[in-house]
Amino acid sequence: MSILDKGLRVIVTGGAGFIGSHLVDRLVSLGLNVKVLDNLSAGSLENLNQSIDRVEFIKGDVTNLYDLTDALRGVDVVFHLAANPEVRIGDPNTHFKQNILGTYNVLEAIRLNNIRYLIFTSSSTVYGDAAIIPTPESYGPLKPISLYGAAKLASESLISAYSHTFRFKSIIYRLANIVGPRLRHGVIYDFIEKLRKNCYELEILGDGMQSKSYLWISDCIDGILTGLNNAEGFLEIYNLGSMDRVDVTTIAKIVVEEMGLGNVKFRFTGGVDGGRGWIGDVKYMFLDVSKLMAKGWRPKYSSIEAVRLAVKTLIKQ
Image (cartoon, rainbow, N blue to C red; front, side):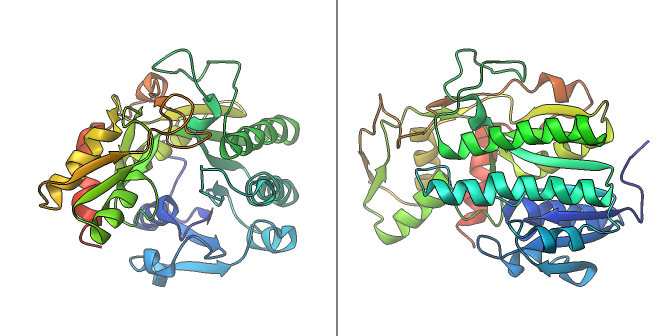
């Protein structure tokens, strides 16, 4: 039986962002009563064009507990996606406020409003440089190597403690690289923008051998809803990614091919720490997704297929 019955009241923080807006579209299509909370710093109302007339949009920030508590009043399920999405080195204070403090505030608002379910989008970056590939949810100890990964792991810890202490169900998803329409950051987007400025040479951060999993956005949303509908206990953690991976050089070749370019020179920066694109870049990421697959979910697209679909879509944006 689906938890997401028609008429259920839900809120999506960060619902005007890339993943959030696709989730909102799906929830609206299921007949749910949807609120969206977003400060529009990274998201856009344009992302909600498909659903804006059927949702209650609240311009607000997860760093403001008072706004959150009011926004979450009367809600049954909270999808918490609002976060600073930048994985590269950034201001530590920004990561703390937007990711850790923001999650704490969401949890406090859930406690004060006695809400039943929380769904949180974490990240594969919590694993750091995992010694086991594909990496299962049980892998440890978790040693993130970026501020972003650290903030996500801190948020996971808070969610675990709050769920067990205040008796509500939480589902955490450790996401691979999610790609699709409305994407505005990441290697695919960066390559397209660089080639639009200079179609003769493409700068590639690192040594080009970085290899990671890429998941198409609809597969991601399917996975999120599958895990929610199979929630057991106070806390579940699922990896959410594709069943393979692809390296950065291959992605560059796909972008060049789909843009119809020829004789593009690849210029590798060499990177740091053995070919990483930047300090904190996890060079090899491939998640074991068998736990979620056992619940009936399966990605429709491979990493290469997801990348190619994303390129075809983004060059038309």
